[in-house]
Image (cartoon, helix red, strand yellow):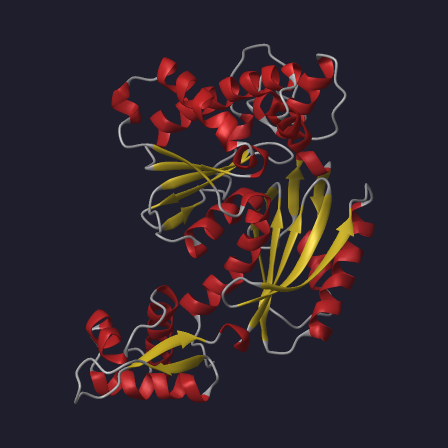
Length: 382
């Protein structure tokens, strides 16, 4: 039989989640949603208000003689989370509130020496801990690669050129906080599910920065596969005997549809360009080469999307980074090519959506990972 402490924590988490998902909800509405008694809700919310996790706001009375109902909100500043995003270009370390709002940020430059870069990130985490004005719930870490689930060892991060790097062990050294970690694509999907409104329950989030990966949400849960390696769609073969990929295979999707592929294509046609957002900007200015590269890239994106659609049947595919930033250019071309490859049977009801978070998605996902553990798995006052 569950202990009283366990039930108390579970009920607190339930109430906190309802308020987080429904800001301004009343105690009576919480009772109706949760199936807990109004008396229990009054006691739970009183504890959470005293603990500084909730705030109350009086609303206008529903009738002239009626009592003024009270709206409840999560007090975002009451707890903080640290999020770390490591990518091929740099790393960002952020201190964020319960609503995901960043209050402090430290940028760490890229370094070919993994140990040196991890040491700088570790130092940035310590700086943010010192700046904290509220309890820190934990540290979430986003890495673009395959991690060993039990230790956080980076088995392979192709675009970082990391193999068998004890990343999480290096970051948590001497820091007495919980550490959580996952790959960047999974965390981008988690950020979209955790912070976006309205929520989608079945979607694929495709990341294009520094390669291609995907996070899969099905039934409202992040799907990770038997070895937590689901979603490495960037390495599915789209062209037999195609371009050599950094992973060692040939013809991988990310060699044709990622930011890296887009920059290479533009420079091969005359260039120069340093990054994908620059090519999007040039295309908006009418640059013929940039427009041609956008068209080629959109065709390659549609090829991969067609495979995702028949494999997973999502209600939406969500994109980030330069594809989201140039969505007005990419969307009609992707749909045209997608419809040319797949029957309407497969596309009925499908949505293609640019992420609101764009290039911030995996960083926000690292924060969401900490918050999800807090709101779902521990008593807020524990």
